[in-house]
Length: 280
Image 1 (cartoon, rainbow, N blue to C red):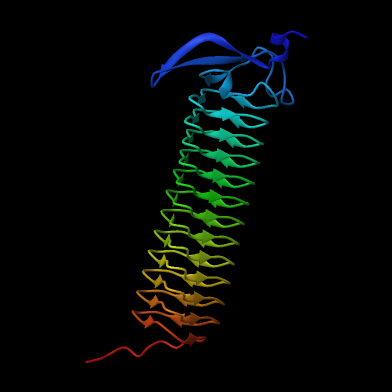
Image 2 (cartoon, rainbow, N blue to C red):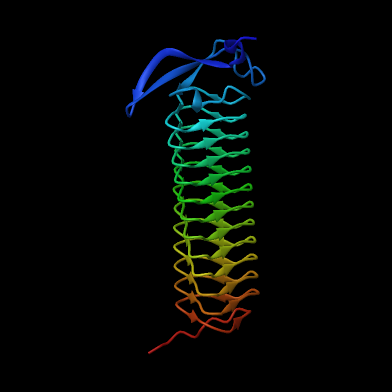
């Protein structure tokens, strides 16, 4: 078997220039990937053969582009008008499509899916069966795994982690080593930061802020402009809303409801005990 016969694709003479890089359209030299790619099919664009493995079922399809030191390998696919560049690595059974961008030293692997206008860069990792789509950004060593779903205009940044079956959507931000897992749902303009943990079946929405090692778990709901920080723990079916602040070593649990502008810095709240409003 000669060297040409061992290859699954070749670079064609059809070229174009992108940011000073000469890209070549590829052509399949054999049928592979369960007949999804047939001999003679034209694929997308790569700079050289280092960008796409000659082994496995990996492929660059449509008008997708892979260049610089980026690489697609194993059974991974990149298609539509997606781009992979820098030192990005797409492998396993991962799929990148739509107009997504994978760049920097980002990793997308296992059965992860990145699509629409999502951006993965700066040492971020998307793995397992996680999905990132819409206009979400995952960057700066952030880690998305499990069956997590990142969508909307969300940002997952700076060593933050989203795993399990957690979902982050709309304009939410998970940043600065925050950890979201379980079945947690983060939405609205909520921000989780500073080593805070949100897990269980909890929900954080509105413009709520969870930060500074606070923990929201079980079926707790944090909404509106509420802020949870310090070492505070919110659990059970507790609901924190309005402009409430819970901090220090405070615990709010059970079916507690805390609202208006109450501030709790210590002790335990376990039931529905609204503060008496001041009346002049």
